Image 1 (cartoon, helix red, strand yellow):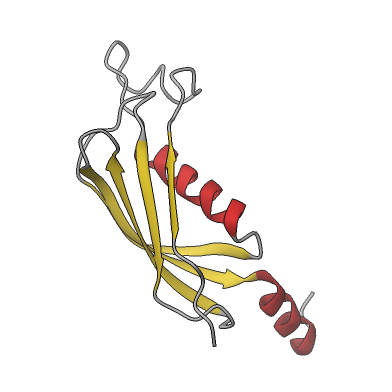
Image 2 (cartoon, one colour):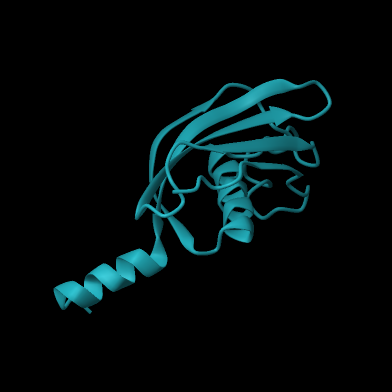
Length: 123
């Protein structure tokens, strides 16, 4: 069994993101759900065969502003050929290396789920 490679990327949320005008006008803060969406987008770009099925834990520890560079690290705690995987993620502000969020994800291999549904006669 092989473990998936960890992911390390940097991203920014643009100042014109549609969620920002109402999220503290004049003092924009990136909403946590937008940060989680960015985590999902990075994950899917690396491993499109997996879907996030649970977010058992997420903790936001520092504000992230629009256009601020954020470092993302994802570490796997499961095997690549298992139907369900667990991962930990960390977000940190790039310039200051200040932790911004941590959390856990549960992912499922889409092909394994479809194969299981086919065996069970579920459509």
